[in-house]
Amino acid sequence: RILNMKPPAHNNEGVQEISQEEGERNVATAICVQLAGRAIIRVVSRCEEAQDNCNL
Image 1 (cartoon, rainbow, N blue to C red):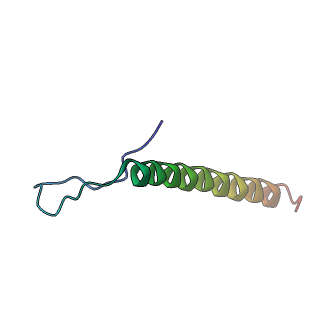
Image 2: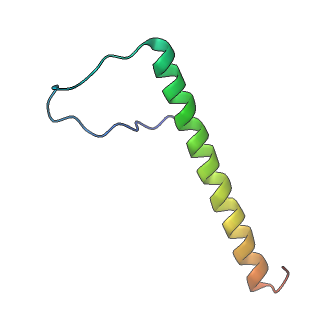
């Protein structure tokens, strides 16, 4: 699932076309950010569980 990372456009002023390569790079970056976010959440959850169990 790919999320649309762009804010909603109320008008088309200032909208720029980007190359396919740049678009693909943006998608790859968005996926990496999403995966990194999930990993951070997973680590924090594990730390909280370990702290609750006094098993640091």
